[in-house]
Length: 454
Image (cartoon, rainbow, N blue to C red; front, top):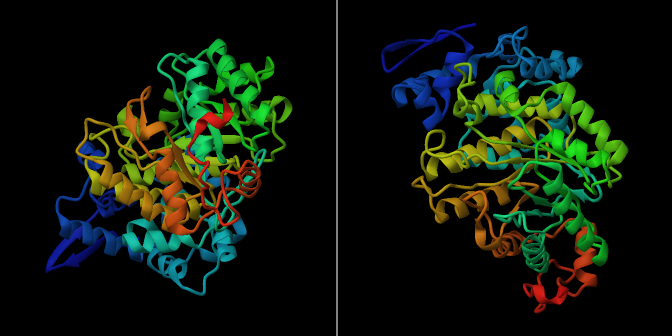
């Protein structure tokens, strides 16, 4: 590997693959906090030059966290298709970028490539891309998955209703669900974050949501985002859940802090297969986001963007129904401002899709950052152009329980109209049957009035 280059008459020497990837990253608060970021724009350009000349095999054979030390590395590399890797291993990262962006390269071409790369390769390619490159590259890739219903079809845009309650009050939650569905949200899933992580809260919420879904025959998925072990216990005890949720990350140390391993996720899939209320075959829901490893001091000295791509290599192994990225949720120590948040979201969406995942996005922010609603809406519109599978739907865009800002039900309707998108097919047919939407995906005069369910 060549680890040095000359820019403006100055020699830039980098230590290893990890150093090149960190210095080539666009500005991120988490990298500055770790003291691994480029010192200035010239050093960043130098790192990008070196990175562009590296081969795919350089990044695969020199993972940022050693294979023998880290389960995420092992899942990334063991989950690769060896024949595809052999075909592209001698390609430079710059050439791989050109291939991805070539207008002749198809969705099927990119799906084949996805099985032959590791997280480090996906991150390396994305670090060489502009914002428009990230949008265009991602827009070419479509990943369709099925739990109870199918999401991810070209021309569709789905939403998860997240009608949380500060007291886990099922009546309050159902009011939010009613409002969301009246605006056409909920085709990705109805997913509630409980305040209390125990069987009682998980079961109480799920039973109430199931009662509503069954009464109105809503074609969707039900999930309660307690810990994976709590959900597994609840499913075994008869709680009506469609799939199992878990946050995951890009290092084994971070996953340890989340209380999750490859073996546990495999067991969770089997529990969902045996006891869940969906046909599958995709029965898992993962949540990720740049900066989670830094926030628990388990980053292993790797930049947060590369760690996020490694997370996708871990997720790919389990073929999930949906993956939701929440870069911007942690706070200014990892994503400082609106520009960093928008860039991180475009990177994450592209990297996830390149690795074959059904990517949903939440360009969100907390109130202790300088990020504002304009930044969030700009990011969401760009991601809609890029072909995100789904976004969140939150009452008024303000999650009163988790205390952060995301897309509202009204934003959801607007995004579909702006881009000419429709809901998932089964859900669209159901909305038309209820008189809430027309055949073209436009909401009717009845839409937005949750009292139709009272």
